[in-house]
Amino acid sequence: MSKSNVFWWLVLGGWMAASTWWHVCKIKLLCDPVLSEPVRYQRPDSQDSLPPALNSTFSAIEAAPDSTLITSRPHTDIFTPIDLHYNSGGVEYIKTPENEEFIATARQYLAANPEKKLLLTGHADNTGSEQINMRLSQNRAEHLKRQLTLAGLPTQQLLTDAKGQNAPKKSNSTADGRAANRRVAIVVQ
Image (cartoon, rainbow, N blue to C red; front, side, top):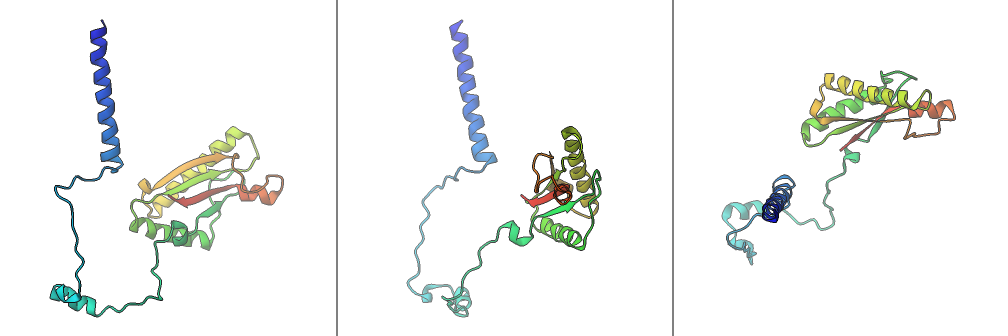
């Protein structure tokens, strides 16, 4: 009986090793490719050793040591995350010119960056039960996703989440605070 268990333990160990390799190397792409020979690079001592096409290209470039290189900016610089606000119990966001400009910018950004996604997180104030507010915030996020899809944003780049009344932006003790908490937050992922 112990001999049959040894076989299954070996099969399990082999499966675990193979699935770990597959996840790390094929899905996460963390394995370096094996090179048949080491790569060697020798820097030319002068520009004379460059091919004529490259030499003429580089001769037009001048050094500018006091200028700085622009580094890639985080997504928040491309367009700032925004909150779309709602009336109490409603699923239609309050339209403003700023909202429409954001949607147009988001459409262009997602078209240029198909690997990026917009996370639509629905929120609610504390009016009503927690269960109703969770459902309301989910409905707000899903309804906004449908509206953005109709506006030309790709469905596969829109994710939804719901927080209900559990993540207020401001205190629910005032009318202004409750109005600020009835929102869908849109951020780039």
